[in-house]
Image 1 (tube, rainbow, N blue to C red):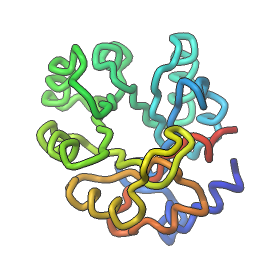
Image 2 (image 1 turned 60 degrees about the vertical axis):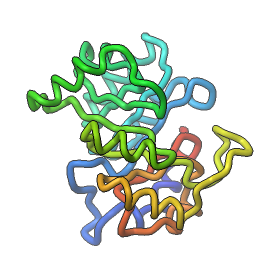
Image 3 (image 1 turned 180 degrees about the vertical axis):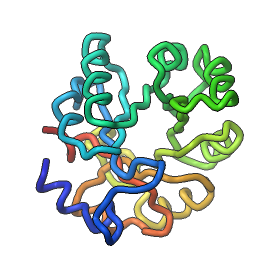
Length: 202
């Protein structure tokens, strides 16, 4: 994993070599099939990175929360506003119908709750409109490149990824086929961060 991060350094870090800004520039994404337990990989992330947890079993999520606190990481929980409120962590919304409990989570955001971050999956223009309407903090724009998570699915590629990120109007994180060999092909001016599953597995 260390070699992979070094390969991304020209994209992830400013000239002084420090991660910066309120939006994590590096994200580890869990996956029920490809990465059902992200704890070991999360423990190797640099301080200030983020973890998007999707479909984790409760014991794994409990261990991940301990890793996140210890390492100073930002945690987003996929698709479950009620659990995000209970665990006092951010929420990630997939590109589908709003889940139960979203209204309560959005109310916490309106009150200025500092941990109530909101991200959205962005695959096309409808998701862009939804992200703007909900006032999301960031969008995971995907799939940037061909990805093992969705074999055979059409990828956006650098140009279409950049165009969709520009429409978003909020920080755009690239997800899908992101690795050291592909990260440098994305338009720097639109790129707020990089997210990966396989490339960051321990």
